Length: 162
Image 1: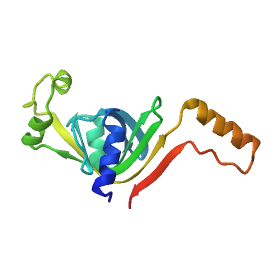
Image 2 (image 1 turned 45 degrees about the vertical axis):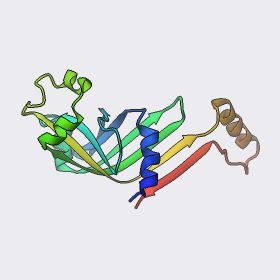
Image 3 (image 1 turned 90 degrees about the vertical axis):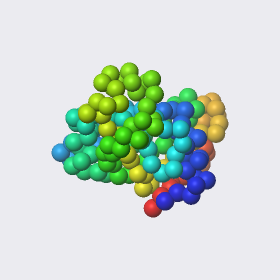
Image 4 (image 1 turned 135 degrees about the vertical axis):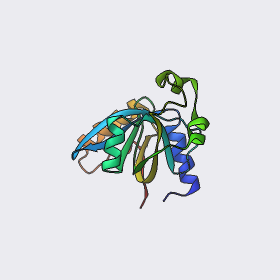
């Protein structure tokens, strides 16, 4: 598991991106779809609204191992997180994260019997963050092609979790 400081670091990377691609398995075949973060902090668990009748809900019940990826090409941020998904019907959680964006997708309101929360407990992951401009990155790649023993240094890469 990640330290509280590292969880803060991960949150700072993904909070502005907001939309991650959730990967589930559909009869052993990976499928991904966009999911919108609804929380305002990260403690090792990510929360998303979904429909109980959605394919991703059935897939997560069949195989709880999922992957989420977040990317912001302009800022050079890439995060991959793997964890365990489950559906959570707690009305308190549905109320806690409810907002106008969610209401636009779930027109039946908070009491819609098809609405549920997908709770994903993150086990491990990896992130990359470029600390230099795109021009500098291109320079590093060009230098690596000229000097065969040079490895491009374009930013930070760190694994976390087990």
